[in-house]
Image (cartoon, rainbow, N blue to C red; front, side, top):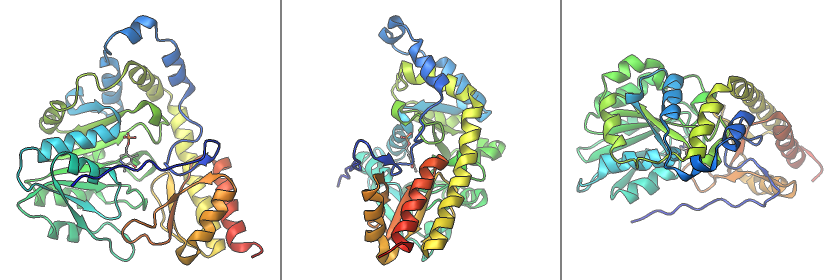
Length: 347
Ligand SMILES: *Cc1c(COP(=O)(O)O)cnc(C)c1O
C-alpha cells in the first residue's frame, strides 16, 4: 500500500495561513547570501561544511551528532529507510491526528503504519502508544509540538517511550520546537547515551526557509551515522547552505517572530472565545479551532476574504476542525476578523 501526498491548493493571491509558513518570509540576510553566490558557486557540487558547523553551533552539539537534510521530510524518509528496510512486517507507530508524511515515508520504506487513536481531547496518549508496541515495532513517530493540535509531549514521556521500546527508533519530530516550551535537545547529555532516538528539526517554519528545503537530524553519534549513510552527499544545495549560515546569524529576525507568534496565538484564542468556538492552546505557530457544525460557515468566511486555512476535518478526532497559522500580527488580525464576522455578525 502506498500513500500519496496531496498538495493543499490555495489561490495565488490568497493570504497563506494553511501551511504554517512564515508569511513575511526569510531573513533579508539569507537572501543577500544567496545573491552573493557566483556562477562558479552554482556550477560546483555544494560544499556545506560551513552550514554544518553553523547548525552544530546552533544546536550546541558536535557536527558528528547531526546531519543536514533536504527539508525535514527527507530526514523522515531517511529514518524510515534505516528503521524499516529489509525487515519483514516492520511497523511504524503514529499517534493520530498526525502529520501526513509519516504514512508516506513508512509506505515508501515498505513498512506498515499502526495508528494510536486520539483521546477525546486529542492529547497525545503515551500509555496507548506503549500498548501498541510489539516486537514488529521498528519506528515510533512522536511529534511535539504536534501538528495539527499544537499540543506538546513532555520530555519525560518521550524518554519513557525511548527506554520501553529499545527495539524501535523513536523519531521526535520537533518541526515547531522554536515556538514551544523546549526541545529534547535541552537534555543533550541524556540523549548521548541513547542509541534509539533521533530529533528532527526544520528551518522551514520558524526561519521562513520552506522554499529552500533545510532540515536536520540530531542525536547520538551512532544513530546519526546510520542516518547519514542513507542521505545523499549533496542533499543541501548551494543556495540553501549559504542562506542557512546567514539566517542563523540573524537572531533578531527569529526572536522577533517567535514573540509575535505568541501574541498572534492569543489573538486567535480571544477571537474564538468571543465567537464561542473551541480551540487547543498551541505551542506551535498555528491554532486548531474546533468549529464543529459551524466549520462550513467559518471556512466560507475565510475563503471569501481570500484567506487560505487548512480544513482538518478528515483527520482522526478532528471533525469540524480548522487549522490557522498564527504568524505576523497583521495577518492574524485578518483571520481573527473573519472568525468574529462569521460567527458574531449579521446572519
Ligand atoms: C512542516 C513539517 C515538517 C516538514 O518540514 P520540511 O523541512 O518543510 O520538510 C515535518 N514535520 C512536521 C510536523 C511539519 O509540520
